[in-house]
Image 1 (cartoon, rainbow, N blue to C red):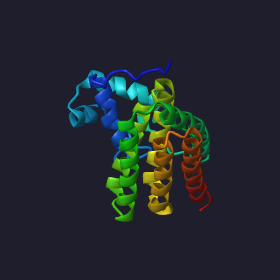
Image 2 (image 1 turned 60 degrees about the vertical axis):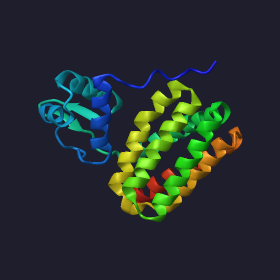
Image 3 (image 1 turned 60 degrees about the horizontal axis):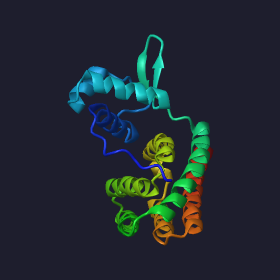
Image 4 (image 1 turned 90 degrees about the vertical axis):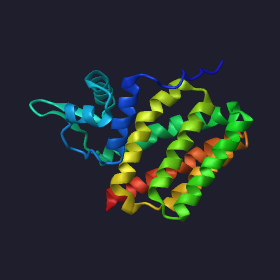
Length: 218
């Protein structure tokens, strides 16, 4: 039987994690910058305990480094390691896409397709923030539809690393091409064709790998 996802997150530590993750992935907290707990408490308005718990989670997945004498700093973007991130994410995205194609409800299929189309529209208008928001929303509905909580928990840190990489090097990317591949993934899932969904996931990962290699070689 599929593993259902737990109820919507309510814990303060989860809210703190989401808020800090957004700061890191969009480079408002730059790689190598110190992580000041008091500033994050003030920013999130969630208290020291949930912020501290969120930071510990980020240390465990490599978004934040704990260094002797320097304390916590935002991890640097390792270009070579990023190819491994994409390679690992590819396996998980194929699994999630196949599960979503098999398990999504009719309403979820429509919503997945709608959010993929929204990415295309945002890209055509050069609306970066709208594009990234639609990307995030597509991930959310896709993850709900797949009903594979274990795979989702594994892929989420990799998605954050890819998002941060894109924000750092977006001048090397082409969002209309990215949007087209996201739409192909959405169409594959919406069609209930597992093979088409996995092919869509592969095309998207091919695009991210090509993007990463272009950054590395420049």
